[in-house]
Image (cartoon, rainbow, N blue to C red; front, side, top):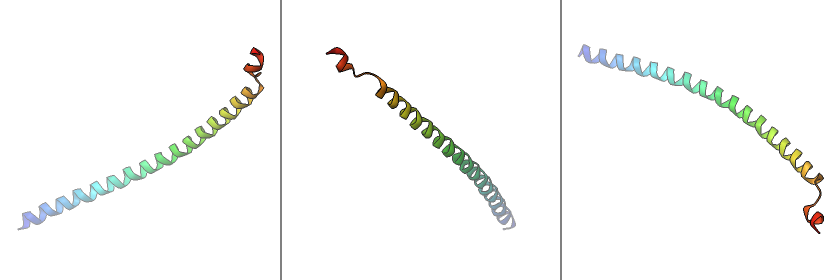
Length: 69
């Protein structure tokens, strides 16, 4: 009977250690996710600015149909 309690106690200890490890991993993943979200936002801003610049350049080009006529 005592050995069963010891086995159960060991399992509980392992479960508690695993839960603590998973909490740490979860916190790390949340931090990484927040950093990647910020980086993603900066990339979206850069892409939007590049798109605006390309569109502005395209508006400056002469119309090809007028040049062919």
